[in-house]
Image (tube, rainbow, N blue to C red; front, side):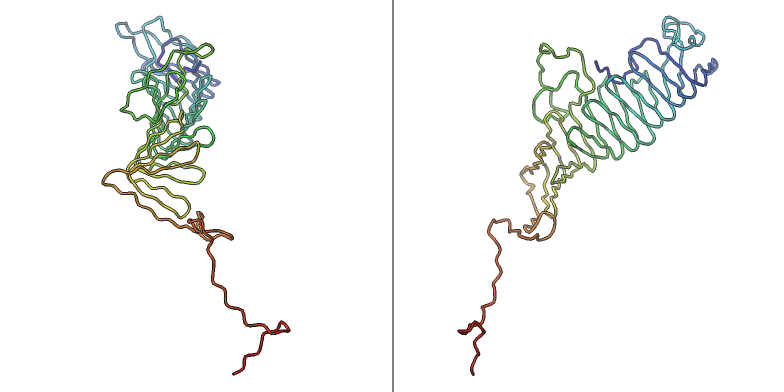
Length: 320
């Protein structure tokens, strides 16, 4: 079962590296170099270099560094921070996170990825970011900052300055779009054949902040805030909403987007009228051959009256 990228569960940490492992007792840290690898409770961290910082356990007495290859969990020391540098990959059987550098703080229960090509991939969704990518296993939450993108199945995508993803503890249930303040609906117990343990790789919802952009096959919906439910494929965009389809544009304060059908709908709000610019000739910005106005009636052009014909079929001469 998917356990998420959680290194806070405790247990031994098995460490291997091609260039050996160094113990620095004064700094209370262990350094593994070149193709370094640390494994703890089904979570694997791989990087060019790994630094494990340890300390005496609460209520214990100082102890020497952990034995080679593992943390002495039965002794008086514990690893409280793990740092990974260069080609970082953190994986489980179902999830994968990548970046240039990662810091895993066991006390705060948070992993922070920085560098280039930041990504967090789960069985059904993928989060990417430019500035940083955080994963909070106890809160079942991921935060993507800077040019953040959430991609789901069938090329469904939402983009924003910041995306906050909340993961389900069990398979998603049918339902509408739910905001962060709305209570979670009661979920029935697992049915026969369904997993009864948590699956942290499934997204419950994604909240978007700043320069929100939702794309369908024909439309682009932009706003300042939004929330997206992968289970229902519904997105709600709020605040300075603009729906663009070719040269056509609608403006309002709230929109509902069905990413499964590609239909976006503006919601009328009292005191905030819906406005729009409609170009009827074409969705692509120009009149196409054989196109018709939006009213459905063919547009006809007046044709000049042909000159009168003589018996021979030639134009008849006009006499003064």
